Each structure stands twice: as structure tokens, then as C-alpha cells.
Image (cartoon, rainbow, N blue to C red; front, side):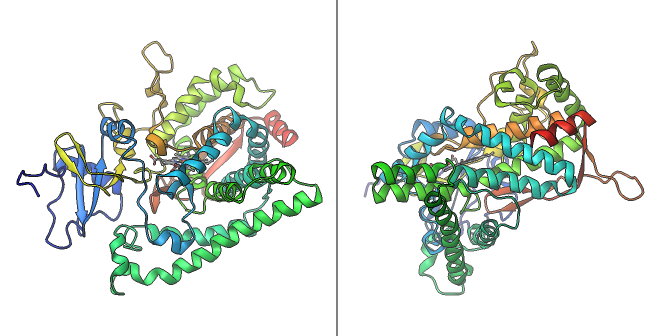
Length: 491
Ligand code: HEM
């Protein structure tokens, strides 16, 4: 050991002996609380620890890029939580440790979800979005359920060629049940063994220690959730009714030219990751963003009018918008960017972890094994970059010449080698949904029996790392009889 004094950890609350900062960690509004820490400790990079486990929070975009991208080799691991294998979630791509297994999975994801190949899903996206519009005409008050069906059916179709028509499909029910327990186990306080792996050796007075039974329940539900669509694919291939999807295309290849068991496992793991076995993975982020969209539109008729003017001018009223129209609709693009700025569905992304060695940065010491959370919410609410950050304003993405500015990096998708691998699909799905809804409907505040407007509930619920828009009421009024006819004919 050297006598030289070690560099200090980044600033943060002073740890107590033994338990460290265990009592300092916030239990709700985490991203906002860490902004307060930043003010209190006068630093954009923050540190806390408990029982030998270190956490670093990065409130600034520069630090996140410096560590997670410029030093990606060091900061691309994920914390391995003992609860994952207990729940059967150890093969979730988002949670795999940095290494060959993750690399193989990520490569297959990239081959299937890059911007070019993602285009093959376009006709499916169009079909499902049109189905959604039709449901909005039939039962507009159930828009939340329709929104869920849109996301789940699109995903299940892309992955398995499995068509879901109703929210009561067994696959949805099984996944929901698993996710409800799973996200409780993953949430801080739900099961402390997530945050502090060391606690698995600690007796049952620790809250986490009692969750083994629940974890087993999640594991059974996860297995069931993978079994139903995989059997469906095999059956539909045997009967000759299969449609193209990640899994069916793979089995067709396997039956014609062969494939290894390892390749088969990779495909199965990806399909289940995308479908969202881990509550925070894919689906719910898109659902959360469209929830934000409906809410903000009900609050801002003037934004709707501007978007509709653009749509009417560029697309006209004789057809529905397609992804080819996207580049000609800058105001809609600005709405898309603003949605993900205003409410990034994963405000703290998914934690990266510093795997290989200790690291020094800006004179601070970051020990090996540290969990690193980029605080996306802090970055997208930095008033030096986004003045008046708490207002929903698509206009902020235009320069003084009225052109869309070059701030096109959507921070909500995270950083570095672990950046969201589904971002092209997420982006096109969300864009198509908001463009289509605005082309066809005015979104208004709902009215009570006496005709008084009902205030929009703008609140969110935190579920693990994910922010979900709470259900609220609003009305969808078709913009014209002709549009209503167009939707009913197109669907
Ligand atoms: C609005 C929608 C979405 C948002 C905001 C979002 C955001 C994110 C974020 C923040 C991460 C973690 C990045 C990091 O570690 O720095 C992530 C990871 C991931 N996302 Fe998304 N995502 C969305 C939709 C999707 C969709 C639709 C898919 C699948 C088609 C998907 C697949 C994944 C996967 C597989 C990972 C794990 C990547 C890895 O660990 O290597 N996401 N996403």
C-alpha cells in the first residue's frame, strides 16, 4: 500500500459509519432529487455509497459523454443483481454483463433494428396505427387501453408474428402480472438486494431477503410468457400460416439451412427482451411517451393547430401520413423531440457499471464496480440549454431562421455502447402514431355531465426506473366526417 493519499470520491452526502449513505438515497422523484444534490454539493458529478457499493450520478451531458462514450470500454457493464436469475431475467439483453454474450445479442439486435432494416416493419406499423385510429373512433374513452394494444400487438407481431387484438390476451395478462411483481422487486426499497448485492448473505430482517418467493413467481410467469408465443410460432410454421417476424424468419432459416442452438437462444432472448419481460425494457417506454403526448396535446390546442396546419399543407386530407412524409414535417419532428425531452421515460436511463478497473476523472476517484446513472432528466431540464425547461414547447427546436435546429440527439435513448438498440423502431412508431392522431383528431379536455371541462391529470407514477403517465381523461374528436370515413376505410 502506498502512503500517497487517494483522490477523493466525487462530492455527495457524508456517509455514516457502516451503513454509509443508505439513508440518504431518495425513494421517489430520484432524478429531481439528484438535481437538488447537485445544487447542495455544487457539483454535476455526485457520489454516494452503502455497504461498499458505490453509486455515481452524472447530472451533465458532458460528463455522461466523457465517461460513458469516450471511456465506453470501462463503463459499458451492467450491475448484476442477484434478483435477475431468481426471476429468470438473466438473459434480458438490457441486463447482460458487458462481454461476448452481450456482444452477440447486441449484434443480432442491430442487424434487425437498424434504421434500414427497421423499415421492413413499416407496413405493420401503419396497419397497427390505423387500427388504433379506428378504435379511437369507436371507443375514444378507452384510449389508454387502445394505446397499450397498439404497442403490444406491434411488438408481438414484429417478434413472433403473433397478432393480439385485445388487452385480455393471455400473453398480456401473464406479462403484466410478472411485471407488477418484478418492478416492485427491482424498485429501491422493494428489494434491497437489487441495490446492494451483498445483502443476499444477510438474514431475513432485510426487506430484500423475503422476496425470493415473489421472484420465483416472476420466473414462472416469465417462462410462460416466452412459451406461449414460441409455441405459436412453431404451430403456425407447421400449418403454413406464419407471417414474417424475427422468430419465424429465424426458424424458417433453421429448418432450411440449419442454425446452432446458441443462435436459437439468442433469438429467443431478444424477442422476449423486446416484448418487455423486464418492466423497464422496451414497450412501456413507448407507451409512456404516447401518454405524455395525449396529455400535452389536451393542454395545448395551439400546438395541435400548428401541427395540423403543417399536416394539411404537406399531406393534405385525402390520405394518412406515412414515414416518407416525416422529413417534410419539421413541426411534428419538434413535437417528437420535445416529448422525449420533457418526459424521458427512463429519467436515469439504465445504470451502467464500471467493470474492469478503478478510474480517475476530473481529480476524483471512481472505484471499480461503481454504478453510474446518467441523469437524463437533469440534462434535458438544464435551463442553460433549454430555457423554461418545465414548459412543453416544440418551438425550442427551431433556430432564428425558422428552421429545425441541429439538436437532434435524443438523450432519452441513453449513452455509449449500451444506448437503446431499438431507437429507430421506437422513433418511427412514436412519430407515426402522433402524426396520424394529429391528422385525424382534435384532442380536447374531457367534459363532465354538466359540460364543464375536467382538468387534465398531469401526474406520473414511478415504476422501478420507468416513469409512466397516470391514466387521465380526454376526448378525441374526428376533425371531419371525411377523415372519419378515411380511417374506417383504411383500417
Ligand atoms: C421511447 C421509447 C424508448 C426509449 C426512451 C428507450 C430508452 C432506452 C434507454 C435509456 C436505454 C438504456 C441506455 C443506456 O444504458 O445508456 C435503453 C436500452 C435498450 N432498449 Fe430502449 N428505449 C425505447 C424503446 C425501445 C424499443 C421499442 C426497443 C426494442 C425494439 C428497445 C430496446 C432496448 C434494448 C434491447 C436495450 C438494452 C441495450 C443494451 O443494454 O445493450 N427500446 N432504451
